[in-house]
Image 1 (cartoon, helix red, strand yellow):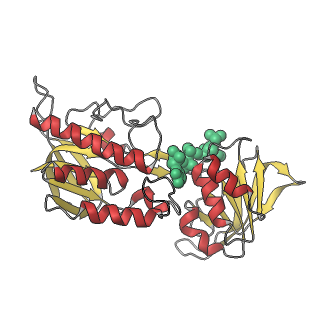
Image 2 (cartoon, rainbow, N blue to C red):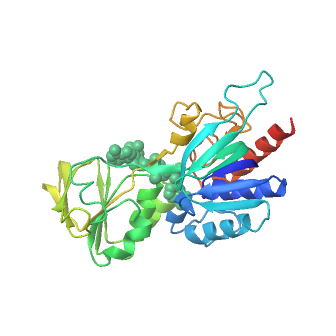
Image 3 (cartoon, helix red, strand yellow):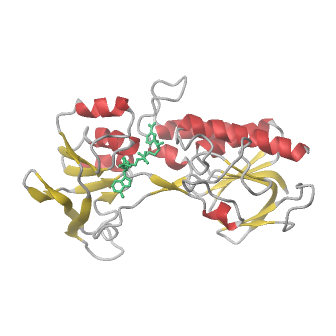
Length: 321
Ligand code: NAP
């Protein structure tokens, strides 16, 4: 049985593994997607000590650091189920333990668990979106910008992902429409200013995308293409915009399913509810990074890493009791 199992291979998970190893805890680090959401940052810019680093570079370095310890066992696979061992809480509140089942049906057990499961990209849920996903509809502007060299694209959203994403796409695309449902961005002013300096970006405020149009192609194949979007209100004389691609960057919802399945409660914004040690409402189960509400819901590399460290300090204290 491991001292702790960390689910998630993003900034929170890797940092938790580094701290856990240095506390000499036997650690299972498991996740499906190496790097997590951190891989989608083209330019990080706010990781202290690194003026110029990309998300994938930073995540690779974190992985190398986390897996450099003998105490850490890395498993790249999907966790399909988490169960509590011992059932109900003991009177002392000490009884704890968890069984993890993986996609190949194998299992492992740990005395404590840290959910560092991150978040899943939100969808617009409009006609054409599902059918044209991967055929011009993308959920990661920084990953897929390259495919739209010389093309006209729409980016939807008003947060850091959308504004940073639009700035990255504008480096290669002929024309970018940034479509936001309000007239104020919630993105860092740094990115807004960067975008305003581009000459090929059109700012479309107070508009929503009602549908994505195009040739759907054959099911299961990547044939088909986006040809345009329909807006809820007309813009420059028409509610139709001709585009070759649509980047949907409207935020993400915390990946709470596994934690919820063992009874962890959610906070008012749908993140895992945690105390100051980042313990969830289930004894021995901790949370770190975008899935938790631990840093005032501020999802950043530094807050995820910080929470990874705090969660392990909580785990260490818990195991010592
Ligand atoms: P976000 O901050 O939650 O912003 C989501 C944006 O999408 C908001 O502008 C929101 O509009 C809009 N939106 C949400 N649902 C919508 C819908 N159904 N239709 C149309 N628009 C919709 O998400 P994010 O930009 O992905 O950022 C998530 C977190 O990651 C943030 O904490 C952010 O700071 C962080 N992040 C950081 C970096 C970086 O530091 N380099 C890069 C990317 C993300 P309203 O404004 O009207 O609510």
